[in-house]
Amino acid sequence: MYRLTQFDLLTGLPNQALFSDTLAAELRSCRQHERPFALLQMNIERLSEINDALGFTQGDQILCEFGARLREAMPDGAFVARLRGDEFALLLPDSDRASALAMARRLREVLSQPVQLVELPIDVSTRTGIALYPDHGSTLHDLYRHMDIAVRQAKKQGVDCVVFDPALYPAPSHRLNMAGDLRRAIEADDLRLCLQPKVDMRDGIVCGAEALVRWQHPTRGLIPPSEFIELAEQTGLIRPLAEWMIARVLRLNGQWDDEGRSLPIAVNLSARNLRDEDLVDKIRQMLAHWGTANGLLEIEITESAVMEDADFALRVLHGLRAEGIRLYIDDFGTGYSSLSYLQKLPVGCIKIDQSFVRAMAVSSDSAAIVRSTIDLVHDLGRKVVAEGVETQQHWDALCALGCDVAQGYLIARPMPAEDFPAWVDRYRPIRASDPADKHGAA
Ligand code: C2E
Ligand code: CA
Ligand code: CA
Image 1 (cartoon, rainbow, N blue to C red):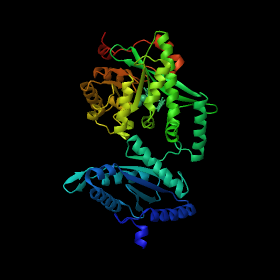
Image 2: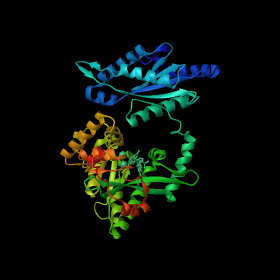
Image 3: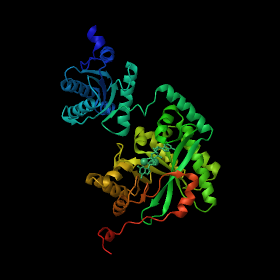
Image 4: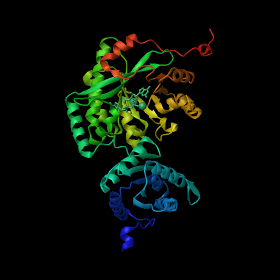
């Protein structure tokens, strides 16, 4: 009976019940002796796909192998368990951030060795989330929750390991208040539309803008999207938010069109928006309501949003494309999609993620990724926008690689929409610097 209730039958590791009991005992002891400890949660990536492709027996074998490796690699005094499904956890006594990260690195080395299935070595990767006692909570519930948030954050950012960051995740009660505030802000028109220009790299001329939202909070001032988009996604507010943005953009499209300065503006949509059954209908109605000329509304969707539910997303993208909306794949290079998958998507442009552009100047690997991405995207008949162009050096390098469009602080930071026309009038096109200048020659 003891084995059945306290251990996982498949891997032979302690189960969540036993892990919780051990954790509770550790908490009591650490409170008394003021000692820290760390919790690590490791999730196996895409185990369900392996189950689908190769069958449950193979999936089980991977779980067993992981269990065995964890037990092997675990230091004395640590406690390891299989919590559920593809989730394992490790309790590391007397451990702080640095030692937890060192442990995560070591485990990664052990766990990333291919698993030999029948005749096939399979590469399996894991994401690790870390929560620390006492910094990240002093109850079982908080520590579990925060370690789980960290692991999801790692998945979202496409990195191996994330330590929980309390600044990003206020307590649930605070989040509830914030969600209420955000709902009222959308209703009361307290959001702000900012625009950031995109310029054509051949002639340096402004060829469009990206719409970026800000929240004008009565006491906290202007809040950047990084602090509320995720909350909006989790609370369903992302839908009214997207509709607010689209309506604002369509109004501006009409206004600019009347002034003879029409420029396309791209709105960002989240994965949640793509899963909204009525999205395409709603946009069609809004386009008709504002009488927007074809091509003035554009949409950016991240690569990961498309991959989350690729079949459904594909249908939505075709629906949007049928409305004459040009589509961009945002943050390209950070998700899992392959360039060959791109061929199936009705997208005109891809936006190379800022991280590659930034790294290009210092790393020849990143430069090679940017170069081959541009070439392949061109071969597929699509265009490339580079994001995060901050320096003349970035501009010159991208120009030399034949990148089509640039966006970034070198050209302009996002600005309130009402300032945009005057900025365009003042703007002088950026040119590639003359190579002769660099050598000091006349
Ligand atoms: P994104 O779509 O990748 O937008 C580009 C972000 O990079 C913007 O941050 C922009 O200010 C910043 N950026 C532009 N050029 C540079 C540069 O040269 N250097 C650096 N370091 N940064 C640059 P922002 O406005 O804070 O937006 C952050 C993210 O929030 C956006 O990333 C987008 O994912 C999301 N977001 C913004 N507005 C909306 C919205 O209306 N709806 C949805 N769903 N998401 C939005
Ligand atoms: Ca974007
Ligand atoms: Ca982006």
